[in-house]
Length: 146
Image (cartoon, rainbow, N blue to C red; front, side, top):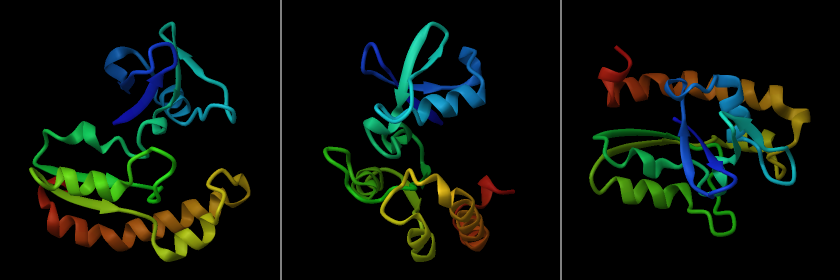
């Protein structure tokens, strides 16, 4: 699920092809951090980063039995919920598996999550971590990967 915030209403919205929004614009809107990148206009609406509410918006999965949270940011930032708080809340009614950057990935990301000079290294580290975790995830949630 890709999320963004309607800049006019402040409401978190899910973005998908069914409502006529393409993937590139949707991802751009989801990452349009106010003050760093401009808002994105789609279907006559202006959108900003969906992470302004939560770094994962995992609350949107509350009605599912099995939930996989991929959380590139784990620390609490301002009033945003911590990903682990979301995980605890969701685990009351669902099986939840959370992926966060491993120590190697965190060392590459560093203190500035917006540092474009390390984007390739961060991407490669995440890819390698994903390959290592694939067997574990398949064992926990086999119907997802069959």
